[in-house]
Image (cartoon, rainbow, N blue to C red):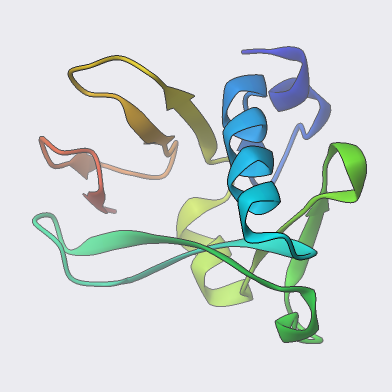
Length: 119
């Protein structure tokens, strides 16, 4: 686990490469955005991950906020956090299997694509 992931010892953790990629995506948008992470019913295994850059004005009072470098925030609603507490978000530039990857300690089963899970 990288230093950035270790600095957030609980909740939602991000590796250095994931932070770098999200900051790049946010810069392209040209706005002060935060990363909203959550889950919804569906996907191959029963629940699928949600991830989107959203305006900071959409942060709700009951959201859990995790602060990262350069004032960047990761936001998660309390219901989703029950399923993904301890999640590590990583990013890989590999040609096969590249992109964002979720490592969820609460998942009893994950699908082959890595984008959905079951508890």
